Amino acid sequence: MKKALLSLLLVAAFMPFAKSQDNSQRTILPINVTACQTYTWDVNHETYSSDTVVLYAYNADTTYVLNLTINIPFISIETIPSNRCSATWRGETYTTNGRYSDTIFAATGSGLCDSVYIADITVSNVEIDNNDVDACGSYTWNGVTYTASGIYDDTTLVDNCAHVDRLNLSIVSTLNFHENVEHCGDYTWYGSTYTTSGTYTHTTSDTANTCDTVRTLHLSIVVDTIPQVTDEGCARRTWRGVEYTASGIYSQCDTNATTHCVTYRSLNLTINTPDTTSLDTILTGCNSVLYNFSSFSGTTIRRFTESTIFDTIIADYRPNKCLINTYTLDITIHKSGRDTTYVNACDSFYWDLNQTTYHTTPTTAPAQSFATDTFGCDSLMTLILDIRKAPVISAINGEWHLDAGDTAVLYPTCTPSNATYKWTYGNRTFNGDTLRIPGVQGNIDVQLEATLTHTPTFACHDTSWITIVTFVGINDVQGTNVSLYPNPTFGQLNIESAEAVNEVTIYNALGQQVATQRNLGTKNVMNLSNLAKGTYTMRIALQNGNTVTRKFILTK
Image (cartoon, rainbow, N blue to C red):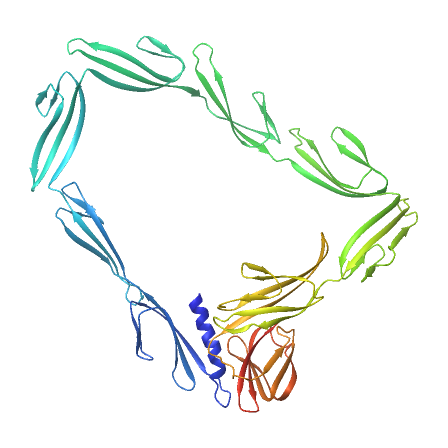
């Protein structure tokens, strides 16, 4: 994105100087290229080995712009040791040591590079398969009977590889066996009855071999599951003594007192949504109002004495009805008597009671009197108003048209001068009268907020903004005093110059000429309100033969 922005800035900066005397438009031909490792541009016959953006003026009317992306080959090297007589790598089996490679070729013309995978493979000439055995008294293996613990090998040579079948024998005095059992209710094992899940053991002795056998039972007492029941209800449903109000799958368990077998029951329940009716009513009265609520069981009357938003639900869950009525009452209660409203405002305040706009704090509090109104209430409303001036930012001063890498210094002109300032740009904020941004690269939007604090909880604000513009390839004539203001402008742009101005030409961000004016003198006002908002470049030809360039921002 940064390279594309740089290319656009280079083209936009180049365009004002690529004009012939008759103001004809120079043709810009962008070329996007992706290449592997290097690329030789046939336009200027130069070779490039990294990402770059190159401008080449082909002739007086044409400029080529090369936007180049260079890819590099991918090479992977890995070491694969093996304690077997062979190794498998990328789907192939290898039986000898060595370095092996596998290349994935990039598509021709894609600009991508080949991917090379390399493996250093080491194999063994011996592979061992271990057999761990516990035996009571003796053990026969491959036709041989062993009576002592030890390690015994049976070796076979195949294709210069020794395959060793190894017996790790342990002659023990105890043999261990394990059983995993799931059962519903009580379980009897070797004469004992178990009623709970757990681990149990039973030992028998082999007197001939002086060896014990220990059997271990891993018992899990499970439940008996009966078919699931499907049912539905209106808003709610009671099943086996429990009330449910939402659809779902619910379960309960019963235990048989004799066998202790647990029975699992489940309910697949659908709760139907009742038909709903919403009744929105606006009520207004003096001191109180009455409202009648109707339901299937009768009428309920309720009195309200305060303004409120009142919600209530009256439901009918009978199977043949399944209704829910929602009442929403917007109640306004007018009170007899007096009331005072306190308001802090910036610059002005509009009071809708008397339809009057105040621009300064009244010397006496304005009051709005009501005789007996349509609701039978007598009222007097008094407004205590405090209006303070908001700060006004008339200009953001400083140099915001910079070469890349320069330092931007901004300071405000604000009335009154005792306001506090907060600058915001990017994700940064700064509090103070003067903002310094060193090493500016690219355009930066800067917002300035001025604040006047009148009380700890009451403050007035004004906000303004500018765009810091950096550009490449445009150098003003040293010592030339030409200024544009206000900048940003809403449409009227003042041009002041120590030298008379012969001609002004304006270009948009794409380098297109959008306006021109001749014989301006040293002071002139241009009306640019017909242009779209955005950032523009102004090329100013002076009477002394010098040409300068200025940037300005047009807002709407």
